[in-house]
Length: 226
Image 1 (cartoon, rainbow, N blue to C red):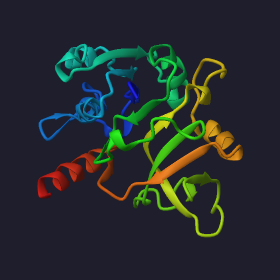
Image 2: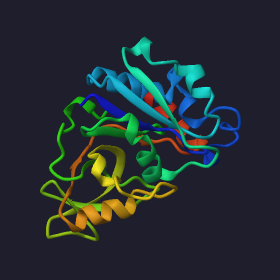
Image 3: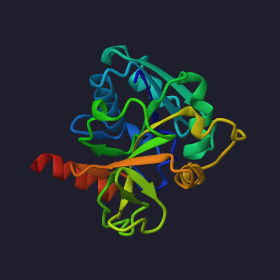
């Protein structure tokens, strides 16, 4: 895969006051912005074209990241306006910049050791999601995983409910044809599950959501202690 989308358009409301003047993806961990963690990992996986969707304090991103040449990639920005378009609307708006082939999508506000190079280049269905064990703040998970297929509810016998780790590989068809505007991806996931076209894998390595100042502090502590 040569293309990726980094979701960075959120308002960062739960991270205030840290996000009053700095977008959440530009908050620093280990001396560099959160989003740079993903850019470096994507570049190492031979991704060469990265789209960053933006809204809150959008001008700060090109100021901090430039055109991506320092990492050997080309960065382009998809500005959504002052109100973010949610995951689905943001992906749809970014499609013209992503090319025709499947692409990686990652949320800027996670930190993980997921190997982007090991993700499938061609998902069997519309998308392939990386699932993680349910964190304390989301104990019931999102979907059930069984034999590489994702299911609603508890799924078939032997399935395990897991949490979406905000990393996946998508075909553009998952949102193509939707009306432009603000919408989440969840209805698209459910349609894909119903047609048997949403696959997944379990990741048992390091993964953290970075949504609040406390979670940011916990990540910094975990990385220092490692």
